[in-house]
Image (cartoon, rainbow, N blue to C red; front, top):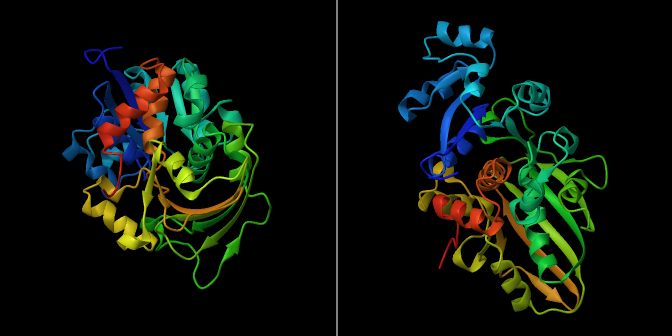
Length: 346
């Protein structure tokens, strides 16, 4: 493909992930957004005309409901798929698995996200780990936000020959901010009932060689996730060697409490000041002055923006399965440049 013949991308589901994927597709010079499909008729979809995004209904019934609500709707999902090369399913958990048969019947390549199980596509995607094995596939699954961060950080250590095994504790946000009036938790903590929590095995669906165990607890806040990791290295390493290893990763950003980035809210404020769309933190934000290396033991903590971290990997996944690129590093560099991913502070 060339820039004169870009990949036509359809998005099914225009929620917190879908709208961010749409913005990211707009930023690429080798893709165009064919349109988005959804089921809602509220304020979220009334903004699409301002962005020149063509709207479709997820079914003929939803198409009629949108039309009756006064939305400009071009037709049902089938019409969108007919004019697209790939569809990104950003629908809620377990809905995408039901849509897969439609995509297969249509013969269109598709990408689902981490709310679905590995078996839905038979392939799980994180750009730095599994780009090559996704090339030319008809489908892949971009893993969840937490799993993406786990694979990114552990892959960096693995490539440096430092990773032996890793054990992590995840403090998970209770719900998305825009839905916090509908649910979530207050004045309590809710542990995931099983150890390991699902994120460790999910990381192994991307890289089976990872020796990783996770534990997780939901906490009463909605900004982001916070991870604490204890890693046994293959040998003794200095703090600076480990930091250099993380610096070499294109999607890990080192931050410092000494700069006033002492909590999740301060990092989100930095994203706003940088002018990131939706205040998005695409990187793993890892505190370098908190990191400690003692012999062959390593301890560190980082922040995960669950609404944003998977967006660049989704763009790379489009390139891999459509054949736009067969070079992971080239795609990552192109995506990073288009989204302004890099050092957060000088």
